[in-house]
Length: 252
Image (cartoon, one colour):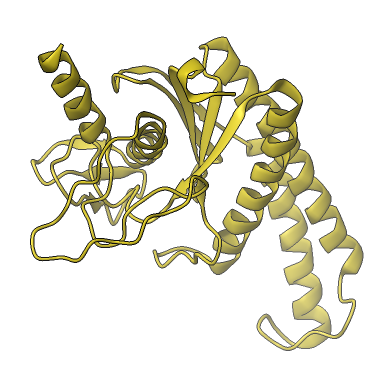
């Protein structure tokens, strides 16, 4: 699908605390709709199986953390993988339906290849986050190809670290990871903030928004159409889309 036919983007932020957060943003930077996607049923099933594995490990190997033999709890791990795949398929269908309902013909996800989370949290949950993201992108790719929807992979660094309103870095709450405080004192949902910035990077690619250089830094090499972003420049946030639209209106 050509860029000129895309006037709305559906961004998807796969979180550690929530299954996924989606936002519909148009080419002016206006947020049309947003939605939180939950996978509570799948999470409960996975957690129960992990508890069974931990109990078996403690009983047969003398405690958690010991080295396990080959094929330990193979059947249980296979069931966990099956639950995760079913969760990814279901969520992909829900995301596609949400995008089409609001007229978005492009989906934007983060390019997490080689990325590892550094934040606080259980190691098991972080590993699941990476696995779930890969599976979700896989099934989104299948559905997008079937329906003629464009799937865009954007540069991941800084999508959650910087505020969508352009106020600068955010600070995540230590007691409530779902909330973030902007530099200007505003408090906002951290997952929504990330989803807005993912959409902004996809729109920056579609609209060919020029880079915003940081004084005293070298220009970063151009990135491909597949992964858009900056390493030595101000990360693209939703405020840059607003500014670009305002300049276009002023010229017109």
